[in-house]
Amino acid sequence: MRTFLASLIVAAGLSLGPPALAQPAVATGGCAAGGGLSFICGVESPEDLKPIAGTRWMIVSGMQPGAGLKLVDTDAKTALRWNTSPYQRVQRDARTYPACATPPDPARFESHGLSLRAIGDGRYRLHVVGHTAREGVEVYEVDARPSVPTLTWVGCIPSTDGLIFNAVATFSDGEVLATVLFFPDLPAAARTGNGPTGAVYRWTPGQAGFSRLPGTELAIPNGVETSRDDRSFYVVSYKDRTVSAFARGDAPRLLGRSASVDFSPDNIGWSGDWLIFAGDRHDEPACGGPRKFGPGQAECNHGYVAARLDPATLAVSAVAYAEPNPDYSWATTGVVVGDTLWLGSARGDRLAYRPLPRPK
Image 1 (cartoon, rainbow, N blue to C red):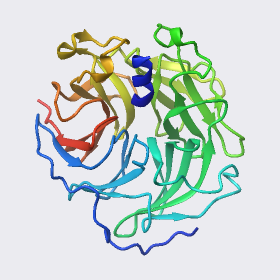
Image 2 (image 1 turned 180 degrees about the horizontal axis):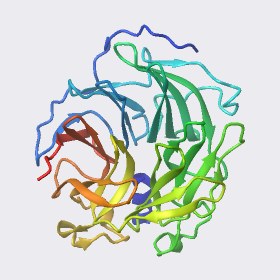
Image 3 (image 1 turned 90 degrees about the vertical axis):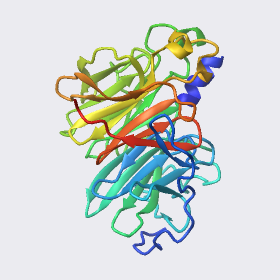
């Protein structure tokens, strides 16, 4: 979400045969560890992260024009530019996604929120919030069976009515949810107030575009994730610093809401049986105390917090936290892979990781 929050504050065929990392990786480490974090450099603004279950691979978005998608080898600690040849193919599904004829231009593609869902036999459906010549959600199929997973663009669901999406999540029947931080017609003064600023929007196969889900209006709704049983979903309120659970439906019913946390939560996603979410510390002494929605806050470097949410009780417990790090800021995502915590960011040129703290 950070591009938009910063502006507010300051004002053809699936193939199984690609070569195994035949092209140079865009990043091979090479930047010194510091503040308890190690880094993979050359990964621009890695806003969201989605591991491919049972493999060493992780999909990483890039929230800068042209950053596109990266594929990270979590064992070797390297990354490659993924949404280009020879890794990306095109096989348009015009029946399901009639509005888009071609994939986004790799030279311009800015990727944001991610959703990855297994569809069987080592294959996955990947939804990507995209900001490029068109706004919307780009849809891909991922094949994790080759030595390096392949990416096949199949279509897109364009935004309408001036909506700018942030995060995306899916249900197993193909229904897609996306968050909008700010309604397009929201007055500027209301963006810094205490009321709702945006909502969750829904698309179902056969629908022309996204429609608002009434009752999901929140103060800067950010990360979104669906439940494992398809019966509910979870939405982060960045400004209220809470996670709300809603029953799935045409008019979602609020099931519960977490206590307000001591950080500004961004993305949320599954790691095992827990939902992990992360963000900047809210009350940061190095930034003069609690976050203020006013001039100067965009440049202040906050510490980070990653926490886990019990999906049944909405109880929150810390996973890891740290004071400000000069080499890492604007935390967005926490993902646990084995005994490693990976941390995304909405700015900078690197992806961060650290050993997962052991429970005391």
